[in-house]
Length: 128
Image (cartoon, rainbow, N blue to C red; front, top):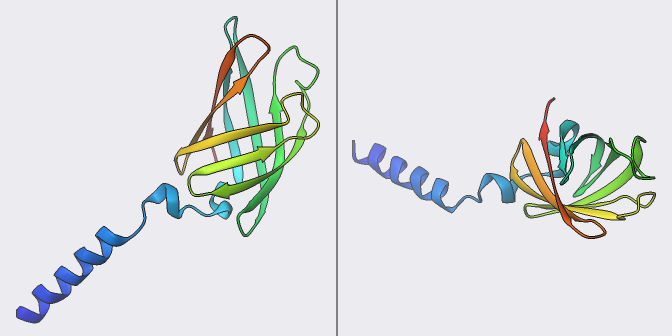
């Protein structure tokens, strides 16, 4: 009985010292299909991210944002770097250049994009 109590105490201590889900997330967990919205003042535009591959802390794929701007309605290639719970996505062919997502969970990311006169909220959730 005493040995079982010691094992339980050790396992509990290990669990408390383990990093949280968001900080332990690896880039390969981001690979898949994501869908969400870019919330504008006039409308909400659909956003689709297809994260196709990962190597180490790098992830790459395409992002599609519906809308009326020059970079909208196209599959734009991106590369991203995951550090802790932040994914910094470089989108060279878009006006905004990059997006910094905060990973809320393994299945949700949120970001803000600075527009010409306003800040827009962007969120996506993993579909598969």
